[in-house]
Every structure is written in C-alpha cells, then in structure tokens.
Length: 294
Image 1 (cartoon, rainbow, N blue to C red):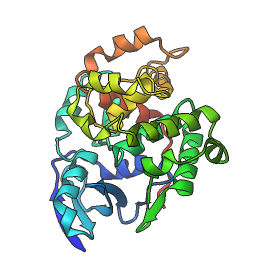
Image 2 (image 1 turned 180 degrees about the horizontal axis):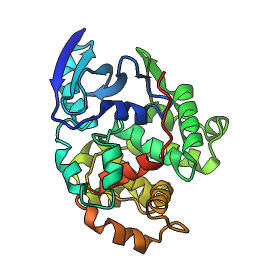
Image 3 (image 1 turned 30 degrees about the vertical axis):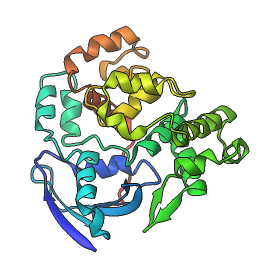
Image 4 (image 1 turned 135 degrees about the vertical axis):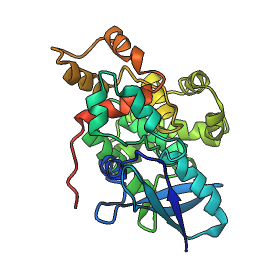
C-alpha cells in the first residue's frame, strides 16, 4: 500500500463535502476519521483509494492511500479533478461576496463541486434520477448498483456498460425501474459498447458539443446532459433551469409565492456567471437536509 500527502489551497471544507457525499447511500463515508473510499477506473482497471482530511478550511491537506503503485500518479491526478483540488476556490468565493448568494456562500464556505467518479456511472445515475424525488432516486440507484454492480474493498462500483447492456428490461423492473427508464439505461449501454458513444473523449469537447452528442441518445434530454456536464466533466458555468431543486431554492431565497419562471431564473443568474455551476451547487446545498454524523 502507498500513502501520499497533498496540500491544497484554502478555503476547502472537506467536512461539508463528506456531508453532501453521505446523502448517497452508496458512498462509504466515515465522519469520525474524515474519510471516504473512492472507486475509480484507471486505464479501465478498477481501483479503490481512501481519502482522509487532516487539515481544515483555510489549511486543507489530505492523506491518500491506495494499493497499486502502477496507477498511483494517474489516480492522484484524477482525484485532484474529482475533488476540485486542481483550482483554488478563493476566486469563486470572492465572486459571490457581493451577490444575492453571499449568505449561502458564507454558510457553506469551502464546499467544492465533487464529480462523480467516472463518466458512465454519472450518466446512468442522471438517467435514474430523472423525475424522481431525491430520496427514492438514491434508493433506486442503490438497488441497481448492489444488484448488478460489484464491490472492492468495501466500495461499490456501478455495473459496467457491458454488464448493463446484457440486462433484460424485466430485471430492472424487478427493482422498481419503470419500463421506459430500463430501456434508457440499457440503450445507453448498448450505444457505448457498439462504439456509437465514446465517453472518454467528452472532456475534450465544448459544452455545446457534449450537449449535442448526448441529446441524440434516447432518454437523454437537456437536464440530464447539463448534469453530466456539471458532475461528470466539472464544467464551471452550468445552471440547469429545469431542475426542481434549484427552482425551490430560488423560491426560498427570494421569498417567492411560487417557483420562478425560466425568464426570472435567467435574470437572477446573469451576474453569477462564469461560475453558474457553483451557484447551482450552493443553491442545492441551501435546501438539502443536513446528515447526522455518526
């Protein structure tokens, strides 16, 4: 086993990162030891890393542990992007200090956008979460992964596209997928293994090119593509106006009698660019339930 220490520029609040990760029952989060297990694919090989925070908001640092020395450097580079250690958050925080979101940004100071651990699982999760309340969306995703995925060192890996493409609709309906959602997930996986969709090149495409590529696939609309851009690729300027959570957060923030219109959301968000993804994250955080640390 190898161990590496990383120093990151603050502010960075890993405890709030763990809190948000813990909303997903598939995440292996330990609040006491401030750790999370991270399942990654490096050169298509599944590996598990443990990330432990040993610093605090203004002087964050981490201990990374893994087993395979072969993939160590590539795994660390992937972690830096997943946890947003590659770019300081101070500039983002400064941008919102004079905005309508200043109180939310102060309350959740140092909360980073944490990416899903691989592109395929991100896209599958986005499809599963479509038009579901968050609690059942997490439950359905957990059933899918624990029924058809696999576990290494206590961390759960989503089933591969090859595995999912071989599933029957009835197998997914047995864990409470709708027939249509089952078709979408299986169809996406078939597109990948047949070579019609290459997720590995997505990070080289523009936001619009990613959007245009994904919405051609049955079951993927603008909301799903935007969430992939945000939580799969980590693009900084995404504001999914069709997202019910963001609508509810804005309703609460501005004391509106009803959810804002698309036009109102456009007006509110003009000054938040070029960090609309962070505006989205912090708005979500403002209405999420706090987890109990165990």
